[in-house]
Figure 1 (tube, rainbow, N blue to C red):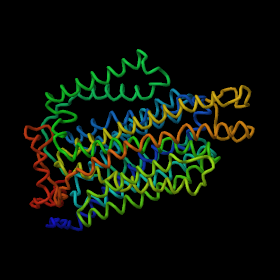
Figure 2 (figure 1 turned 120 degrees about the horizontal axis):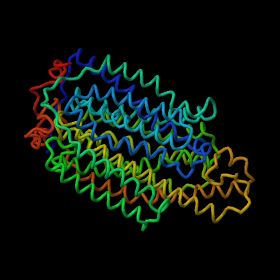
Figure 3 (figure 1 turned 90 degrees about the vertical axis):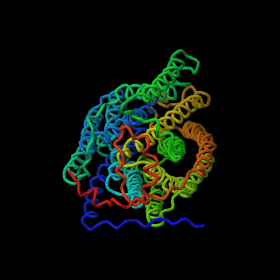
Figure 4 (figure 1 turned 180 degrees about the vertical axis):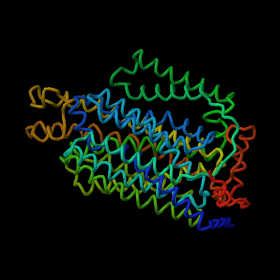
Length: 544
């Protein structure tokens, strides 16, 4: 017997106009945040070469991801408690401040500090954008909007490497920071003018300071273990053992605190929902695969294919174009049909296939074949990323959607941190080993050795030395892709057990996060799809 899918409610023209204005403001902010995640990919080899810090290269990426990860649950919970607009504007301002620090950085230390400050603000830009859409659009209609959000990420992922390459070869890589200032000001203006959200009555918020602190400690210790283990410190060193112990102790203490907190930053009742658990684990694995692969592909393309920074950006276009098309297309399909379970299953399987293909890359591989492999990954990511978030949001009322979305994204970002850190550690350690074994004592590689290698320096080296370096980069990175395939296959299997709950056709305001009956919100969310007593227009009629 075929299950009937409720038809989506039709919002009034005034409501549609309001949603589009809100959405326009969110797109500016999404562009700001997503550009900054990718703009350094093509510029990174030159930056670390100039600042003599190849051995600290992974921290330029890891610092941003770690800082944004720590802040995700904070923004999500506070948004549910005190409203999202003020937090949203504050996050943009913090992001701009980090850009100023990075733009003025005289060395790698200040560059990494600037990236960390950016991450503190960037965590709010992404999560609050996703939560704000849930404030004004019911789940059945939300797919097409979230698909476009995924498309903006794809578009900026093309524009970011291209801009990074253009800045590097032209006016200077520091403009990758300076460009955020006018974009940030535009984003703040858009939020002030267009961002009008439904008004909710909340009790005086009780902030879970202990939970926030313990979560930050556990997250930091975990990422430091994966970053330093086997490279800076031996795995059996006192430092690594202490960090592992710190991760476990802080994690256990966090769970104990959350059981008793009045307003837990990550309510444990979320983990009673099967769909939340399955999509969260799958999202974590997707984060490992996506960021582990994307963080070092532009460096690989420059060193192995001989492309300059701008050309490496162009070579990423097939991946992002495929992601753009599949993300928008899958979102529109979900809104039209109401069916969504099969999309992340197929998409994640395609990601596994792409990783398998990339593990076979060699320095002699035709560029168009390499681009085709990247396009395969883009198709898979576009079909799965935004749909996983939609599944989570459909399981909880809007009063808890920020917390639920942030918690899901937190574990995806933990995957991103682990992916970037683990792949970076394996890559750098293996590269150093291969270069030590293969490089002749007198190679002409420069006084700084491996730390000072940039694509332009490599091009000027003798053919015999250049081939050793190219082979080393290839042999250091491609095996890592193969290691990730079994992990992604596990995610495919887990997603097969997701329960396809009909998408809600109205916005379930539900109990306020942290209230006495918030633990019953899961059942309320499951019933939201048949409760059409409250339309989108009613919620928007109570605007601030």
